[in-house]
Length: 119
Image 1: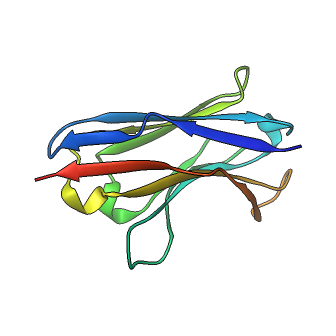
Image 2 (image 1 turned 90 degrees about the vertical axis):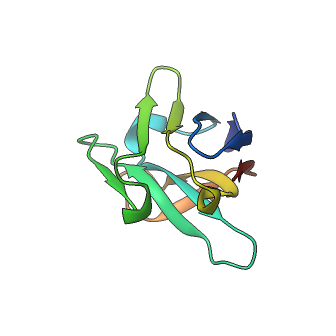
């Protein structure tokens, strides 16, 4: 059974930092692209960052470039999202996701963790 469990969310003031973690189980972690999505109230879910399984290349949505960093530890089956210089617009539920093996099709999502940035 595939499980993705996020942690590290919370309330932070604008300009602050948070580090999200996502622990995976039940999957062959190293052969999957991992990513972070977010959904704010009244808005569509958007992908924030992803890290490709085979070359560790990283892709970010424009709004977080230079502020957020995605990383992964294949031995721990964990993906991280370091979020710096947080803004109120970053407030959302953040979920990690995994693709199918050796694929770019997103297949699994975690339950999500709330990130709230106060002004």
